[in-house]
Image 1: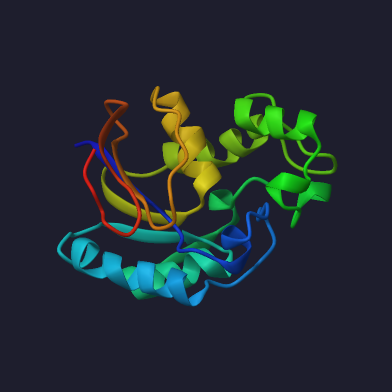
Image 2: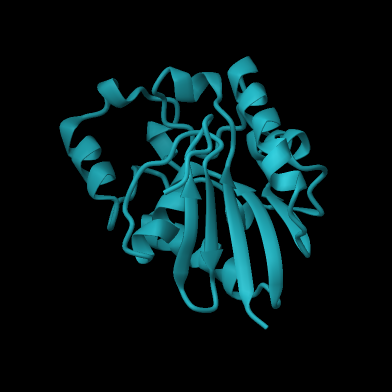
Length: 184
């Protein structure tokens, strides 16, 4: 039996809307973010999952509750990248070297923060330990990006995007972005 994982990025927060780096800061969903999460409910409720987990940050937990139901576990392993001293800064306020390194992503580490290699290690530590079956995980944009990069699909996804993965065969089943849940 194989392992299938559906990764869901949390809904919009005010910091997302303002273009702020929102790593381990525990900011809530905005009203739009709550609506985005509710819009996922018909898609997710039609599916059966053997486990439902979430990052332990409230924006992911709240998205899980609105989009599917109470997560069985809340895990720090599914957190966003820790941006350290860059937390809360707007993209436009970042020094050019930080912006370029973040766009490159591989090898990035914010001052006083976590490296992308360390984030990959903790995320993959969790994903590799999943038993056979279908799993639903509510997480963050950086987590989706690190996984998709490894599946040769480097892209930024909007709030409440859903990525389906055949983890066993290491292939992307689908990517559905944000509000419209468009395929592709």
